[in-house]
Image 1 (cartoon, rainbow, N blue to C red):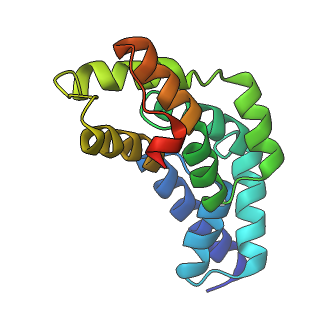
Image 2: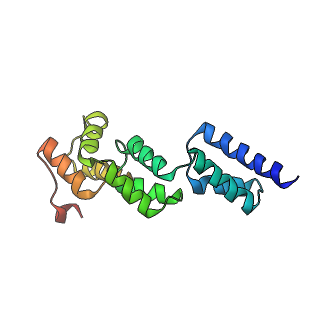
Image 3: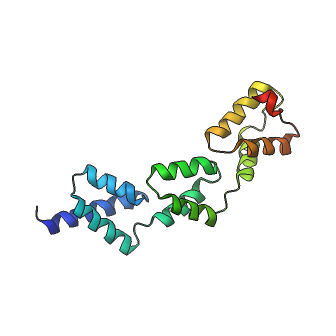
Length: 160
């Protein structure tokens, strides 16, 4: 296959990938490498996609944060974006642009998922706190939200 056909093919493959869902630059590079395209073809394809506005890590990151802020904490969101190959400076900028209100998210999840939970039961309390910790919420925000809604929280010494 000559170079122009390979580049067209790489571009077409990348556009098809982006048609299904948004992806980061690193994800596109990885997918194209898996398909066996040369580094030069991949670089040209990424440049072309960026030029046309099909590939923009900053927009992807802002969109990702908006889509996930209601169910995940900032820590997990930033970790997932890093794994997707987004640069830390882009993540930091996007986090400043999009307000992540962990307390509201925790309150919403508690009221819908754990409305019948007995927070005075230590085992239940630990289970719920761990649920939120696994989703990237900070312990202070979890404790603050539970205390605000139920006027109850275990002392840190007792909980640890």
